[in-house]
Image (cartoon, rainbow, N blue to C red; front, side, top):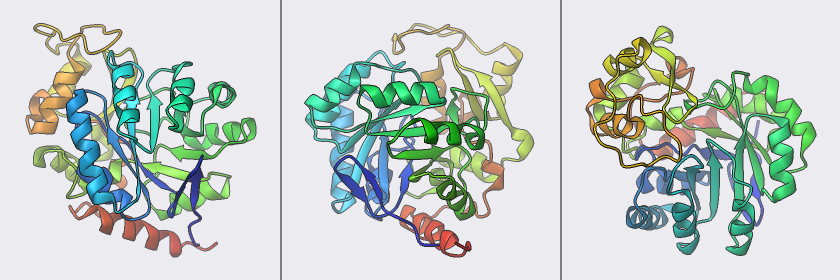
Length: 319
């Protein structure tokens, strides 16, 4: 099967693949730019970044993208949500993807800044709302996704409902691991797919070696659901800190930067994500998709090679 292009507003990606935006500092400018250069869409995970840092990462991505499409992902739950959005628009980011909460006002801000807004949703109702408010596209995320989750339903159950509800580009996300999954999504009406887990093992991914090692060794039993202080469940790989979360013994924050609009303060999710990104996985959270253990090849390689392998996998699936 040959892959179609993905059109979002006035943007056209040669490949209908969006690299998922992974916070905190897992998908930075280096990864987003490398993916964008292949003809797919590269995304910077902007949650947790300072404004100047985001400017630098966008510049890095642009330098590597060879004219390809670069966007950001920002969760609405972040206290600096609007500052991140405004910074990205001023830097002329190609598109903004937002989830982990829902903003009704961002669509006007995007329109005024000539920046397409893509909403991550997990229901047809919210997809319809986003479409009416001016979303340029919809990412439908099922329970199979990594990080913060908005549903306990499978992407394959939710997607047909969303596809029927809106007349926008609709991107399938959650559990899309290999070419056969992409073909399955396209055959039920997806305009594209979003993939994150597979790109953690890219050379350009900013995750620490210890973080990537957990991806390389994870088994099915290692992938669990935790409760995040954000107020949403999250999917992560078992380690020392995750076991503490599951047993209710994770340490409460010492001081607080008030980085979230709402936080249970049961533990500091941002510090846990920063720790693991920097290599202290025993004191951190490593988010992953439900099927990380299904990865056929867990070697670390350039993002361009990962994309090329995905395209080849699709080509081998009967149309």
